[in-house]
Image (tube, rainbow, N blue to C red; front, side, top):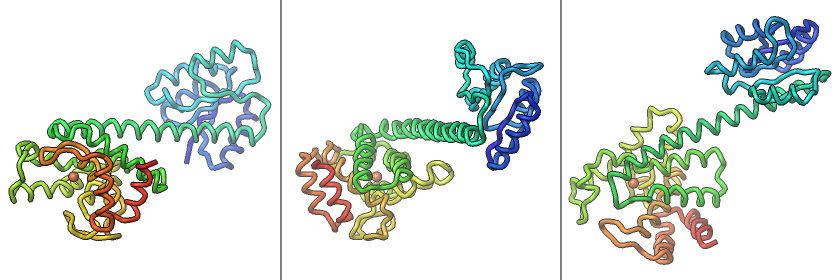
Length: 315
Ligand SMILES: [Fe+2]
């Protein structure tokens, strides 16, 4: 439940607003002046503040200034109630960081709309900020992986782009696409356990080295298990080496039993590996790589996804 701090010296208006907003399911902290509102703000940590401008003891401007100085008050939505429409007041409040105005007199729907739109906007901004902060951390981890394996420089970024394009072409939901980005960037994070002499080896790997290499999906999945916001990326990490005919690893799953995250990543990971120089092969031309993916339709790769991939790549 969202909580709102309401500061208004007109007792009747304060009561009416409390009733309107409580009926909408908000928790209200009423204050009859700025000073009381500031104390309540520090204790109750409301999700939003609605304040009159002219109030005894501490006016709305002082309240706004004091709130914005608090660490948790920098971004809290702040809405002024005002009977005044003078330009000077508006610009003063804007310079202090007010988010919006509600001019008196207002009716119940106006009040509810103003509150809801501010809270929705705040929620969106928070989600976006959190996601982009997480993405930055994930990119830093990816840079660590790539720094150990110079042959794959740029691979993660290319896989991310190819995976996004394929997911858009497949009409995946937006929520899934957020995790796809994390998954594409982190898919090889488990390679951190592989010694660099093995990663950089130009000849074929021996049996012990292959055994180690084949552990990277499970090792990577284990690393993400304890991280709440990255858990949803685990299927990309764990299943990206599973193959449609069951000859992949670590579980040897086949067909639809391979989660779709793994099926998608297997295609774009293989395509990028084919078109880039690696210690064990020189790069193929794009058209030859497309042909190779197409020939393995229904053998290594999900046939329907291959069709969409090829169609999307050619357009
Ligand atoms: Fe891998």
